Length: 180
Image: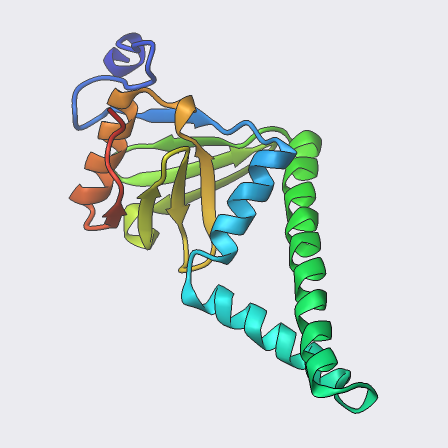
């Protein structure tokens, strides 16, 4: 009861042991495209995937054209298809948010929770691989390539600091720092 009554404007409740940071993630198509790109190319395997895709397409064209044209066909296919696939992923993210509702993330000392519509996913901090803060986005990695994300502009500096404290206390790898 006391913690519920002690809610400040920034979403942190109570003292350090029972505080909660809550963020509503607003999804837009351009922002989701940028985030999908950051996730795709956030690991070396993303770049390897692009090279493999270019190689496969070049191999398909190998008998039909000269080697130079074959390489250009592979590069052209990747240049066209990777942005298309990322745009489709961004559309899927924004469409899901419009259909089900904007995801709401809650962080406390023990768990990370995502609520979207009627679905609630609660993961203990020990299940989080890493927390990464970029200039505009906060990524909560569930695996090396799967992440929940939301805009840093949705949080106050105090929220960011509390989120980093939760992660560090749980020995979650942290990249980035509180914005100045």
